[in-house]
Length: 203
Image 1 (cartoon, rainbow, N blue to C red):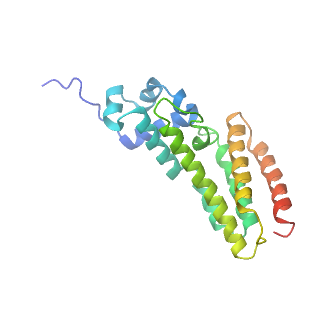
Image 2: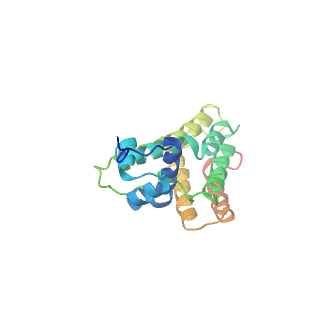
C-alpha cells in the first residue's frame, strides 16, 4: 500500500519548541503556517493532525514557554529574603532573560498578541490571564512583606505590583527593539529608586 499522504514521523516535543520560538519572534498573527511548518520540519496536514489548529499550537507553545523560560525571574521573587531583594532580583533576572542573544528578545506572554485575533479572542484572553497571574504573584510577595512587618501596613501592594509589572512589560518592548543588557539594567536602577520612594529608605 502506498505511504503517500501519511503524516511524516517527527518528534512532537521538538517541533513544539521550534514553533514556540517562531511565535516568540513573530507573535501569533505574524507567524504564518509556512513559517511554522518550515521551522517544525513538517507539512500542514501533519501540523493539523498533531496539534489541531494554529490556535491550539500557539496555546501549547505558551504553556511550554511558561514552564521552560524565565523560571529564574519568578523563583527569585519567591526566594529572596526581603521584599526589596525580591523586586530587585525579579527585575535583574528579567533584564538577563530578555537580553539573551541565543533566542528572541523580550517576553512571549507580553508580546505574543496584544489585540483581538481572528479566533474569537481566545489567545488574547489566555495571555491576559497569564499576565494577571504574574501581577498576582508580585502582589502576593508584597503582601507577605507587609504581614511580616517588613513593609508598612498601609503599603499599597496592588499599585506597587502594577508598577513593577508595567516596568517589566516595558523592558520586554525595549529588549525587542534591541536594548542591551546594560540598557535594561539602567531601567532596573530607575525602578529601584522608585521602590525607595514607595517603601522608604530602610525597606
